[in-house]
Length: 168
Picture (tube, rainbow, N blue to C red):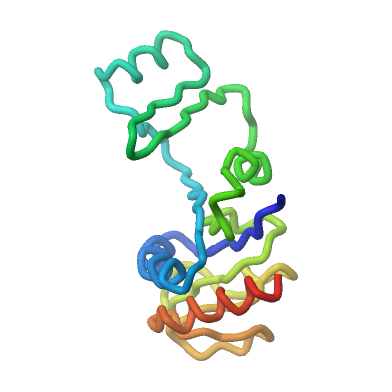
Protein backbone atom coordinates (compact mmCIF):
# COMPACT_ATOMS: atom_id res chain seq x y z
CA UNK A 1 0.00 0.00 0.00
CA UNK A 2 1.39 3.37 -1.03
CA UNK A 3 0.44 6.23 1.23
CA UNK A 4 -0.38 9.57 -0.37
CA UNK A 5 2.20 12.23 0.49
CA UNK A 6 1.51 15.93 0.80
CA UNK A 7 4.31 18.33 1.63
CA UNK A 8 3.77 21.62 3.40
CA UNK A 9 6.74 23.65 2.22
CA UNK A 10 7.90 27.20 2.82
CA UNK A 11 10.83 29.33 3.81
CA UNK A 12 11.87 29.02 7.45
CA UNK A 13 9.79 31.24 9.70
CA UNK A 14 6.65 31.16 7.55
CA UNK A 15 4.61 29.05 9.97
CA UNK A 16 4.65 25.46 8.69
CA UNK A 17 4.52 23.90 12.15
CA UNK A 18 1.93 26.39 13.39
CA UNK A 19 -0.32 25.62 10.42
CA UNK A 20 0.07 21.86 10.85
CA UNK A 21 -0.79 22.13 14.55
CA UNK A 22 -4.13 23.62 13.48
CA UNK A 23 -4.82 21.48 10.40
CA UNK A 24 -3.99 18.02 11.82
CA UNK A 25 -6.83 18.06 14.41
CA UNK A 26 -9.26 19.25 11.71
CA UNK A 27 -8.21 16.39 9.41
CA UNK A 28 -8.61 13.90 12.27
CA UNK A 29 -12.07 15.31 13.06
CA UNK A 30 -13.06 14.67 9.43
CA UNK A 31 -11.97 11.02 9.71
CA UNK A 32 -8.55 11.30 8.05
CA UNK A 33 -5.65 9.58 9.84
CA UNK A 34 -2.55 11.68 9.16
CA UNK A 35 1.05 10.76 9.75
CA UNK A 36 3.84 13.30 9.68
CA UNK A 37 7.48 13.45 8.67
CA UNK A 38 9.29 16.63 9.67
CA UNK A 39 12.54 17.64 8.06
CA UNK A 40 15.05 19.53 10.16
CA UNK A 41 18.42 21.03 9.30
CA UNK A 42 19.52 21.00 12.94
CA UNK A 43 21.31 18.37 14.98
CA UNK A 44 18.50 16.31 16.41
CA UNK A 45 18.42 14.46 19.69
CA UNK A 46 15.07 12.90 20.59
CA UNK A 47 16.50 10.69 23.29
CA UNK A 48 17.33 11.99 26.77
CA UNK A 49 21.03 12.11 27.64
CA UNK A 50 21.75 9.83 30.59
CA UNK A 51 18.74 7.55 30.06
CA UNK A 52 19.37 3.86 29.31
CA UNK A 53 18.24 4.04 25.67
CA UNK A 54 20.53 7.02 25.07
CA UNK A 55 23.49 5.26 26.68
CA UNK A 56 22.93 2.08 24.66
CA UNK A 57 22.59 4.00 21.40
CA UNK A 58 25.77 5.94 22.17
CA UNK A 59 27.46 2.61 23.00
CA UNK A 60 27.03 1.67 19.33
CA UNK A 61 23.54 0.31 18.67
CA UNK A 62 22.68 1.58 15.18
CA UNK A 63 18.93 1.18 15.71
CA UNK A 64 17.09 1.55 18.98
CA UNK A 65 13.37 1.22 19.66
CA UNK A 66 12.10 2.81 22.84
CA UNK A 67 8.66 1.44 23.66
CA UNK A 68 5.91 1.85 26.20
CA UNK A 69 2.23 0.96 26.20
CA UNK A 70 1.42 4.50 24.95
CA UNK A 71 3.95 4.94 22.12
CA UNK A 72 7.18 3.75 20.58
CA UNK A 73 9.96 5.41 18.65
CA UNK A 74 12.66 4.04 16.39
CA UNK A 75 15.96 5.89 16.33
CA UNK A 76 18.43 5.06 13.58
CA UNK A 77 22.00 6.25 13.35
CA UNK A 78 22.77 7.26 9.76
CA UNK A 79 26.29 8.72 9.75
CA UNK A 80 27.10 7.53 6.21
CA UNK A 81 23.88 8.91 4.72
CA UNK A 82 24.38 11.84 2.39
CA UNK A 83 20.75 12.77 1.90
CA UNK A 84 17.42 11.90 3.39
CA UNK A 85 15.35 9.49 1.35
CA UNK A 86 11.73 10.54 1.82
CA UNK A 87 10.29 7.38 0.24
CA UNK A 88 12.37 5.22 2.57
CA UNK A 89 11.20 7.21 5.61
CA UNK A 90 7.58 6.78 4.53
CA UNK A 91 8.14 3.03 4.13
CA UNK A 92 9.00 2.87 7.85
CA UNK A 93 5.46 4.06 8.71
CA UNK A 94 2.56 1.65 9.29
CA UNK A 95 0.38 2.25 6.23
CA UNK A 96 -2.50 0.30 7.77
CA UNK A 97 -2.90 3.02 10.41
CA UNK A 98 -2.71 6.06 8.11
CA UNK A 99 -4.59 7.65 5.24
CA UNK A 100 -2.05 10.35 4.43
CA UNK A 101 1.50 11.37 5.29
CA UNK A 102 2.02 15.08 5.71
CA UNK A 103 5.57 16.18 5.13
CA UNK A 104 6.89 19.35 6.72
CA UNK A 105 9.70 20.72 4.65
CA UNK A 106 11.34 18.70 1.86
CA UNK A 107 10.48 21.57 -0.50
CA UNK A 108 12.66 20.15 -3.29
CA UNK A 109 11.08 16.67 -3.27
CA UNK A 110 8.96 15.71 -6.31
CA UNK A 111 5.76 15.20 -4.29
CA UNK A 112 2.46 17.11 -4.21
CA UNK A 113 2.84 20.17 -2.03
CA UNK A 114 1.11 23.18 -0.64
CA UNK A 115 3.41 26.16 -0.51
CA UNK A 116 3.06 28.65 2.34
CA UNK A 117 4.07 32.22 1.69
CA UNK A 118 3.87 35.32 3.87
CA UNK A 119 4.57 38.85 2.72
CA UNK A 120 7.99 39.92 3.96
CA UNK A 121 9.37 36.45 4.72
CA UNK A 122 12.62 35.72 2.87
CA UNK A 123 12.35 35.28 -0.91
CA UNK A 124 9.67 35.48 -3.57
CA UNK A 125 7.03 32.77 -3.84
CA UNK A 126 8.07 32.06 -7.45
CA UNK A 127 11.25 30.38 -6.16
CA UNK A 128 9.08 27.74 -4.42
CA UNK A 129 6.77 27.01 -7.34
CA UNK A 130 7.26 23.87 -9.41
CA UNK A 131 5.05 21.36 -11.21
CA UNK A 132 4.26 19.56 -7.93
CA UNK A 133 2.58 22.52 -6.23
CA UNK A 134 -1.17 21.90 -5.89
CA UNK A 135 -1.96 25.11 -3.97
CA UNK A 136 -0.45 28.14 -2.29
CA UNK A 137 -1.59 29.30 1.15
CA UNK A 138 -0.79 32.95 1.74
CA UNK A 139 -1.75 36.05 3.70
CA UNK A 140 -1.58 38.07 0.45
CA UNK A 141 -3.19 37.95 -2.96
CA UNK A 142 -0.95 36.11 -5.41
CA UNK A 143 -1.45 35.20 -9.06
CA UNK A 144 0.17 31.76 -9.02
CA UNK A 145 -1.84 29.59 -11.43
CA UNK A 146 -2.93 27.13 -8.70
CA UNK A 147 -5.62 27.46 -6.02
CA UNK A 148 -4.84 30.26 -3.55
CA UNK A 149 -5.81 29.48 0.04
CA UNK A 150 -6.02 31.90 2.96
CA UNK A 151 -3.12 31.01 5.24
CA UNK A 152 -5.14 32.12 8.26
CA UNK A 153 -8.22 29.99 7.46
CA UNK A 154 -7.23 26.57 8.74
CA UNK A 155 -10.66 25.06 8.01
CA UNK A 156 -10.31 26.08 4.35
CA UNK A 157 -6.88 24.46 4.10
CA UNK A 158 -8.09 21.30 5.85
CA UNK A 159 -11.09 21.06 3.51
CA UNK A 160 -8.79 21.53 0.50
CA UNK A 161 -6.53 18.70 1.72
CA UNK A 162 -9.51 16.41 2.34
CA UNK A 163 -10.88 17.08 -1.17
CA UNK A 164 -7.43 16.53 -2.71
CA UNK A 165 -7.06 13.26 -0.79
CA UNK A 166 -10.40 11.99 -2.15
CA UNK A 167 -9.18 12.62 -5.70
CA UNK A 168 -5.77 11.09 -5.00
